[in-house]
Length: 345
Image (tube, rainbow, N blue to C red; front, side, top):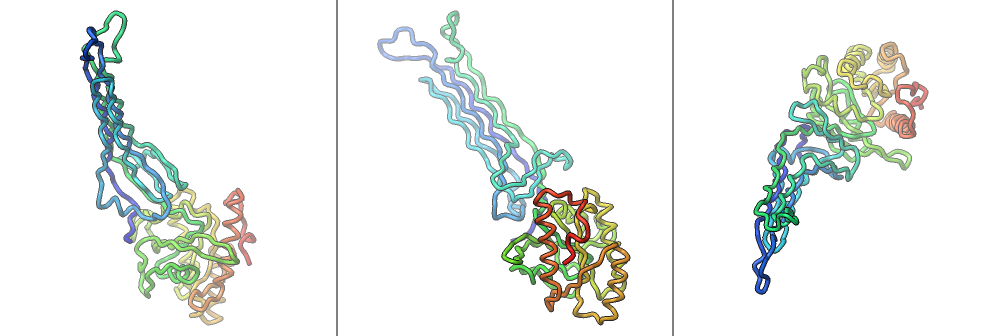
């Protein structure tokens, strides 16, 4: 299934049905009174978060949604039927904005959450409603109220316990494929991953969700490379796993490049708990490991873990460190106050 994390949708709720003007015309009833029924209410446009979705691809092929108009009132005091609602089903983590892309209307964070985005118009009153002691044969009825039309923007920010970040080709997809059943594309060139991948990791009989995010480069917060939209997927992660390619020229410089993008993007990304790991350790000599570790420790002010997804070195230790912080944040701890010893094995 293709991945789409932003969509523009036109929605319109249903108009209310018109009220009816009618009078009783029955045998042996000499003075039949008004009997016009009310119009039915127009259908609403509702957005609901459901399980089993992780993309907005459905809204690439259909961008117009219109609820049903309410039925008109009829004689013999028969009210019109209410129009059927339209329900847009979205993944957990979807945010709904006005057309300007800035005014937030709804934020879906749980399965089953429902929000009415556009309400249907009320049905008009039939002439039976206007009957009174002084006007027993009213000849007026109300038209139904119009529905609401608007254009909204859907933006998906994946909800994962841990997000894997780093420069392109840092080993993020290989790590995800090692610890979960996910099958991301893996190759020895940058930007192999073009959209976020989700996987369920299992360690010590416990599970948590990991998101493999496309590689960041300098200027990503301004849209360079794959752009800043993928940074939004890290906003909901409880912890970040920052992988640094040990075969690169300078591990410390690579770390600072990605951290600068997180700080420039804002939204609290730079304050999230972070586990730093030197990846591709199997391809390094002991001297290179020592040198790169020293550079990385100087840059991040913490002792990095050693990781090789290919050989399995350090994989379980990284998983346990991730789950330890995830558990801590689930218990209500302030992420900004989690110290390095919270994730050291």
